[in-house]
Amino acid sequence: MIVVTGATGNVGRPLTQALAEAGEQVTAVSRHAAAVPDGVRHVSADLAELNGLAPALDGAKALFLLLSGDLHAPGARPADIIGLAAVRGVRRIVLLSSQGVATRPLGPSRVAMRAVEDALRESGLDWAVLRPGGFASNALAWAESVRTRGTVAAPFGDVGVPVIDPADIAEVAAACLLDDRHTGAVYELTGPKVITPRQQAQAVAAALGSPVRFHELTREEARATMTRFVPAELADDTLDIISAPNPAELRISPDVERVLGRAPHPFSGWVARNVAAFR
Image 1 (tube, rainbow, N blue to C red):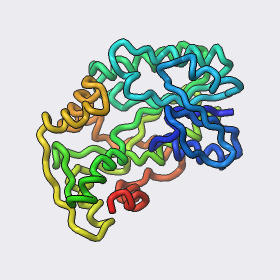
Image 2: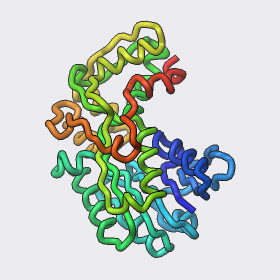
Image 3: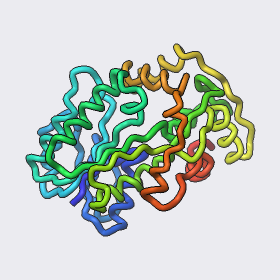
């Protein structure tokens, strides 16, 4: 059995589907009740409450570990999940980390994630670490404003990074969970090219076949919005990257193609699959 945390999210959902289609027994873990593919077991659990998570791990051979936002906050102990998994008999963990662990190692949220990576390396388990950059699905934050006002609002409109399609992350995660050849690997996951928020808005407009106006937010306005959903430290680290990406953050990684044997999907492909959210 394979346990997928964050199973209802942009990475967890396609990963759960892919594993089920591969014939694996899957336990999907999320905080709230959710629809899952046929044959998949669902467990409602909060990763910050180990007693609630423990039963989901019984009988599992592998775990996909995606940390919720509150586990990035000061005082959180996300590495305890790794210890719990080992005690429960899990033999392999694939961790969804962050590109910033390597490119911005001194950011507070990156220091915390590095500690989780280190705990995984020292656990004695088989492991793989995925370090994606910015997610294409972050554009879903614009869906309501596009639907109601035909507007995208974002900071740093002409500063781009090579955003990654979460479906590509899920496919790489499935490979790492199922294939021993990826044991001990650290994969940096990016899209196929640098794309700015303004260009993303244009891609949404093209998919809709109707105009979308771009409104540039200040850093302060963007931070106020982000901190409604994630800890301030994580918001600040993210804004540091998207305001002035360094050469490592602009690099197009070969790792998606190395694992999957194909190029990563472009942002336009992600929009085409998700255009209904913007209508």
